Image (cartoon, rainbow, N blue to C red):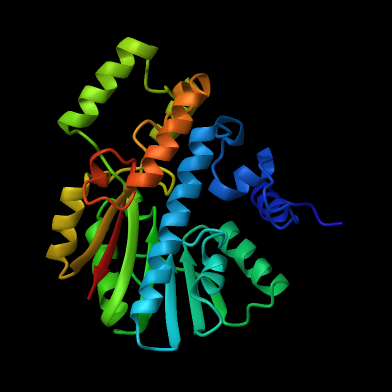
Length: 295
C-alpha cells in the first residue's frame, strides 16, 4: 500500500462517507479545512460557516431565477474541496443545464474535489488549480460567479475583483462574501455591555498559532485584507460593478470561547440573525458581508 503524506491523508479523510448531520471532528475539519480541528468545534464556528453557505446558496438560487438562460456557466472562485460547489446544481433545480468550474490554489483541495466529482458522476463539473488574480478564462464567459471568503486573503484583492468582472458576462451576477470589519458605534456599545454583564473577552490564539500565523502572513489562511462593508462597496464600484444586494450574515457575537459558556444567549443570537438577515441594515452587526454584484 502506498504511504500517504499529511495533505494526501486530508484528501483521503475528506472522501469518507458521512451522515448528513455528522458533526464529528473529521467533518468539521473537512468543512473548514483548517489546521486546528480541535479549535473549531464550537457552536459559533459551525453556525458561522453554515449561515454563510446557506446565505450564499439563497443568493445563488435568486441569481439563477433572475437569468433568462436555461444553460448556465458558473465559476466558484476559491472552491476548496467543493462543499459549496456541489450544492449549486441542487440549488438551481432540474430546469437548468449547469456547467460548473471550480478553482483554488490549494492542490490537495482540488484533488479532493476531483475525486468527489468522479464519485458523484458530475461530468459537467471541472476543478483546477488557478489564481483568482489571473483567471485562465476568456472574457464574458460566466453567467454567475461565486467568490466566498477569498478576497480577504489577498494582498491586492482588486486584482481578483477585476478578473471576476472581466470573465463575467454582461448582465451576469457575482456573489462575493467576506468578513465584515465592524468598528461602528453599535458594535462598540454591545461589546462594552457584554464585557460588563458576561465578562465577554475576544478569544485569543495560542502562542503556537500566533507564531504560525506570523510565518504564514501572506499565505492563503491568513486574513490580510479585512474591510468593512462600506469599504468593499466602494471597491466594487471602482471595479465597475453595480450593487444589486448587500446583506450581513453570521451574527454579532460569533466568538467560540464566549458563546460556549452562554449557549442560551447564542440561541437568541441565531434567532435574531435569522429574522433580520435580509434587513437593509444587517451589515451593522454581522460577521460576514455578502454582496450580489452585477456587471
